[in-house]
Amino acid sequence: MLRSHDAAELADFSTTYSEIGARTFACLLYQLDCLDAALYWWRFAAGAGDPLSAHLLAAYHAAAGRGPDARAWRASARLLGFNDTHLPHPTRHGTTAAEGYVEHLPWNKIPEVLHGFPPPPEGLGR
Image: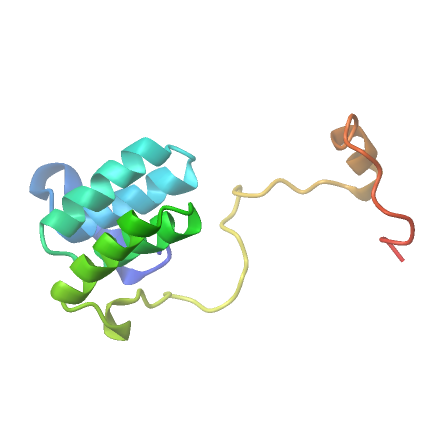
């Protein structure tokens, strides 16, 4: 979502409060683990008529095990006309993370990071 063409809407969001900007801002907040704020802005965007935001809310509630909420948001997404054309289109293909998003961790440092966790099952690294 944050790599889609909709990310450009985020720059004007503070002045326009567009539904696409709200959805993109919500996705950024979700990535930053600010769940309550992300849900607020997804609801804002869905209420403003963004079908993808309603779909994202349905998917979130389904994953969280909240069936009635998931069904309600799925119905809202359908009423707003959600279909596959509303899914974001990545600006580049691949699974590389943005520069500085992931820290490189040398193999010899992994035991320090995992200190306190149970050891992996025997043969997992083979």
